[in-house]
Image (cartoon, rainbow over all chains, first blue to last red; front, side, top):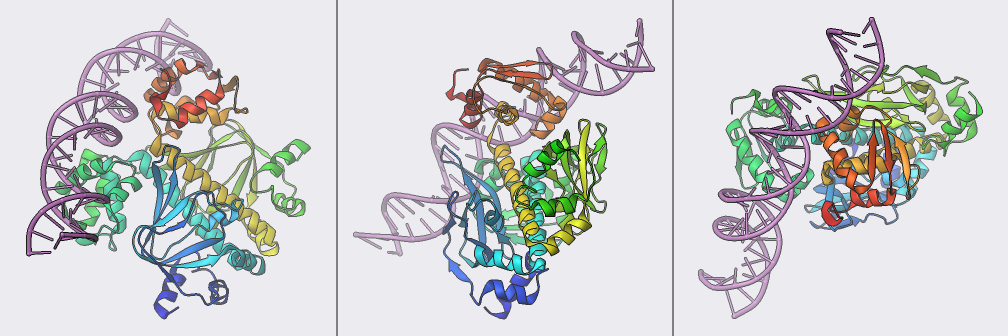
Length: 231
Length: 231
DNA sequence: CGCGGCGTTGATCTCTGTCAATACTTGTGG
DNA sequence: CCACAAGTATTGACAGAGATCAACGCCGCG
């Protein structure tokens, strides 16, 4: 693993509070593996033996429903870990995971993790911090889903993509629009319409490139009751 | 703490995998305290020093939004623990908590918990199992919110209230309908209408008493696309 | 008795899902 | 280089679900 990858690992919520030694022990000298776009990392219901660190790329976590449709629970990005929780839940993944872009991932053994937790209380605390962080993310997502309209959800999604919190900003949609739509709990058609409704607020879409005139204004739009701004 | 309370504690996801000794150390000889309906247990943004075990009653976890409305994230019941996660998240509660019925709660110090985790790896694993359980609940709730219509959400809520998984069942709504509505992500008016739509499926409402003719039928209704049953 | 909180009902409107038709993109093979 | 097919995105028309607004009933309480 090179210096760059190491930096990303050390910046994750899970590893940032963990000691250098404990981290190295867990990684066990393994490097990141490349997964093509669309690779199934694990499937709902199968034994949970590993968790993952995303060095680069995007991974969707989803549940398949009886009638074949899938519900995207979350899409993780570079610098995040996922599936740690599954290792403590009776040994089976409660969701499925798939790369939605070509990605580089570290795979870490659940066995090793358990051993580390037993050996080093700090690892345990780091795990708890990371799990709590995930909880918080989900809580926020629930709130978001309940409160906001389609265009507002899109706005808050875009704001989350921006590296800056104000001013002008150009970002790229990290994955397909149909996935963005699912992620935001709407149909692709509704996403298209949401995109148009955002245009008057200084958001220009061109393919998968998005130019946001004023990030703060967009953030405001996603927070306040929709018609308090000029339309 | 009497025998009965102890049994409830030992049945929680958190304590069931924890040793008897570790549990006793955490409880520290303290008994359950009674909280009137409407008691604020902690407020979003304040320092997170304790977590709670519900011996009896119901507690809502919610977030206040800028414009004054509140979004209910979850309502916990007897035999559940909550706010553990907050103890590992930079020291502040990210949500508020309030009893929605008169309740008996155990309050456990975050300090003591951290100490226990350092002393005993099994406590750490129990905590992780519990956090993972909460994660799973939230994931399920997200899926539920995205996929189901109002009546279906109500149906799945009622099924969750039933002690049995089939046959006839009579339950009481544990808290006000307006809270049920918020919990299910809809307006009180829509809940009223959902109640009516469930009547043809063998669900009778009388005030806060609900008689369900056939729990399994109701469960099926909440799972399948709405119009596959007679209506 | 009258007030206030909660719940229901009705009318209306808005948003989103659905279905169908049409672009646009990409990759394939001639 | 072009033709074609498959996947993906957009647009329009329509219907249904739910929000909103307003009115009213119910009930507990001073």
